[in-house]
Length: 312
Image 1 (cartoon, rainbow, N blue to C red):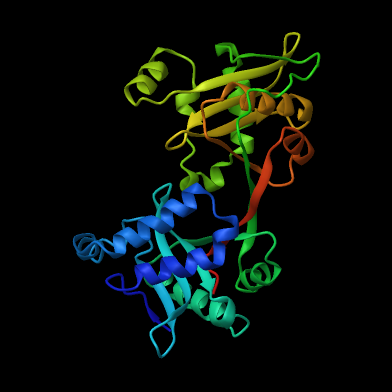
Image 2: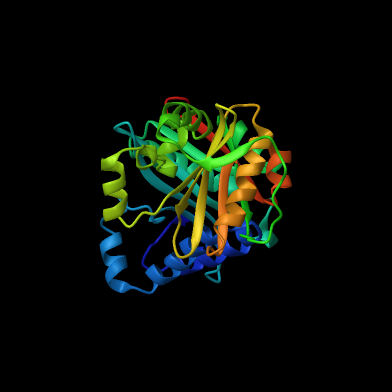
């Protein structure tokens, strides 16, 4: 085990991450890996990054496990963030080559980056792990991490030929007077506890001239719909651009609005026909049947875990 050397390790670490996580890697994850490879070939970037390791989201700190022949078979990255002014660290890219697993490499690397974060005076450690990896979940629990949230990443392709579903629920454009209720639901479904990572900021969804003007200048095109039954608001759905022709969807619903959510998601697939793909992040285990019925597929469910740096 040795410290990550950004001047020569980034490309090898990118290869290891892709090998271990490619089955559940989304477009963002693939771009992240490709950016690591590109950065690993850019000498000017590497010279810069070596001096700003604590201010970039690229994995510039951490430890690797290297064989005698120079092959990197294990990795754990440490990425700094700020949450309400406090320094926190995300433990990321914990990966072991399939041929070298069950030898304690991942645990040793994780323990070492925890020590490294403490040396940086962190206040808390965070990480996320797939829910279908029980051995890793147990390892992190044994190290003092507790579950904070579960998030499922769903994907679907637009399809303008989808048949309309007969229902007494109507899908209409989001009306400004729905905003207060919409915001309350958004805060429940996209919790502040992990907003430091996802950068959820729903001010752009707020009705009004200044939000419209800001979105116009940023070339940020939103589409918003509401599901209503009579005068009752049941749910809303927002489509926001997410690089290229893909779109991210954000739902705001009560806890028992399964039918409304299904209708909104089907409507989005019909309406966003010029988009290449739709991504939908939602609390794990909530309204699963409705999301599946709308034609979405689960890419992965991540468990977010946290440990306080004062616990040793």
